[in-house]
Image (cartoon, rainbow, N blue to C red; front, side):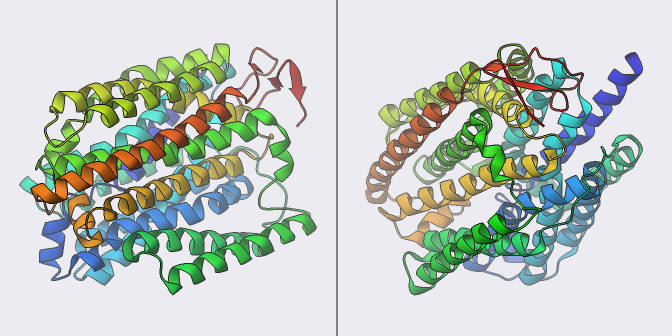
Length: 491
């Protein structure tokens, strides 16, 4: 038993490092923007793709790569992801032009997608039932703390070492993690069926077109290209659904959505990502554009939220092992709504920064309650043998929500200020005038109301998911029998 626990803890450490690094690199380039743009003789409209290409690739590939992990082994795919991520980080660091950097970031995102899409499945395969929720609590730390830690590290490293070390720092960590992963990550029995290549291709094109159209809408507004991409995405989505009804080995097992806990938990994950992450984006823009804080100082004001996640997420995950996810996850979303309401009613051009600290503290507690509990519910109610696909599907829902949040925030900001100025504020290279600030606050409050409404829908989905009974037979969290409303779920 002691040896098993040591193995579990090493696996957990490797997985947390993986998701942490993938999350860090989604934001670590923000504070390096001015340095990168000057060094590579580029401009904002081009360099913004250093961020956007990473988000786009991960959103598109998460589902497909999770499925690949089921077939070829999740441990193998996780290790491959770490290797790709590490090599791509080195290529980012030595890039001599903006085009080379964007291409290297796309490759880095492929590695990040492999890490994210297989991580939850590895946890579900490795940990016993009574400890799986706690393990998801630690991975929640990786996802939630990583994005903000990226901003802080990006500022410190760029200031004292130079922007290239933002990428180089991943290399030694990645090498150590790959060595540990090769030794300790065991691939569970792989699924004996074929890859649905037509389905994966159709879904990839659909997601690419829809996500890219959303990003372009935030950049350019409604144009013929945006409309065309949206229609293209919808057409290929229809073709994908038609293909899934005819194939023996579908990319997405829609039969799993008959399980209400599984279905509602995924919906809650999407709506939570769509509603909550946008508020963080909006707050950073407020602190930088109106208060005039540097991106590094603005991010430090949000630290209480991530401290709460670090302290509470493992404990909340453990409680979900005992009581199920519904109460904890729904209560967590309620606290997120409360925190955003604090921002809505108290944030103005003259508001005290202590209000930000208060709201950050409240939303951090809510996040610590929601993420591990909801992830545990999704994995515990997935079909055995399909944990990789489920993990990828969960990341897909979350990443599409993240892109949607980005679009909501930029569009809301663009209702009061030019889009070019909104992007400059987002990366911390500009500040609003007094006249622009008043309009931006109104746009921000409208956006926060929209985000609160989305989170209310997330809370409803969470609250109506059904009651779980997690004291059924089975030695491992997601690998044993699962119980929903007292009824065993068939494998």
